[in-house]
Image (cartoon, rainbow, N blue to C red):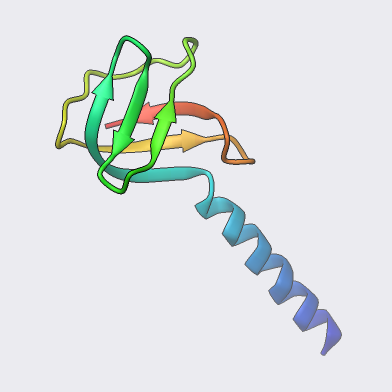
Length: 78
């Protein structure tokens, strides 16, 4: 019984981390000069210079790919 509980706990922790690795939403504002994407949810993401940004416009759906800690943008997908 303890093994089942431990396995279920491990799966729960891993699935939570998977959800934290990306943020999906609709672009509310994009400032290419400072490389900041703001989603309609109010979340803003600063995109490092070494990460390519596709041509995005207000109203488009995007997926912001984050590192494991969720504090650094690693990719932007349309």
